Figure 1 (cartoon, rainbow, N blue to C red):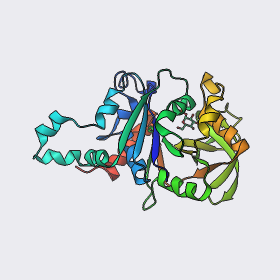
Figure 2 (cartoon, rainbow, N blue to C red):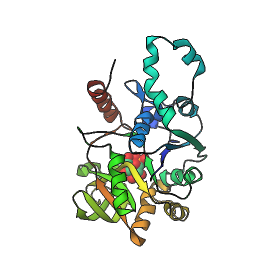
Figure 3 (cartoon, protein in one colour):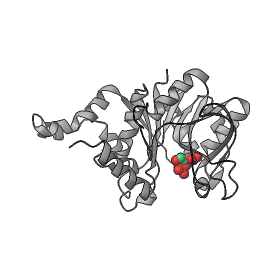
Figure 4 (tube, helix red, strand yellow):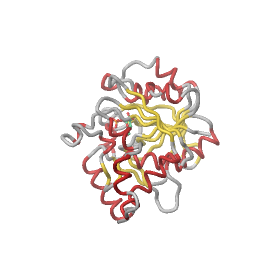
Length: 276
Ligand code: G1P
């Protein structure tokens, strides 16, 4: 029912310079797998097959990663190393990739609006690849949990987690009434509130399900925090006229846009998921 997942991936990744000078931050490896591939796995698990990537200048390797590398395939064909390509080959067999370039960096809302050409007029998911999510035991992945909720409520949903007071200024923060276990109806949301002014501790993390009317709202959303067009502002508008839910997901999330989060994710994957 939700077939497409949008990956805004045009940002610079300045916190990882110089590594990200010519390499997209989404290609930073967590052990041996690029960040974006974790996101694609999560979208596939949630039943999505259309991976719509919003890229920018210097992001060719993102496109190449999800394409055939004939020379490499030829070299390792029939050797034990072929096994190393098993996962990425399975992704390529099961998903279809489309790309569009965001020419100017005008914020996450603008990146999502740029993806409209690839999404069309249907509900869709958004993954910010630098928020890496992994399962907690036998639970479904975060996006799959959100799709199940969408089937029930048919409105936009943001994934949230509680963060300490001193970190609220780094996130979009929601306020809302709990309507069911872990599900809140949003009545306010603010992008990166000044310290001490956050309406709650519930921070939006990089997983969204959006209904397509968000595109029309985004077209009319003026620049907000940092002079950028913010998805948080557009979602507040949607919440005022319709319904937006916030879902406290089950699972573990690493902020791979920061060095400590990236290291934590790397250790977690090496200890729990990596196979020689
Ligand atoms: C974006 C969103 C913010 C959200 C965050 C999650 O901010 O604008 O609302 O909380 O992602 O990672 P960014 O981290 O891109 O500045």
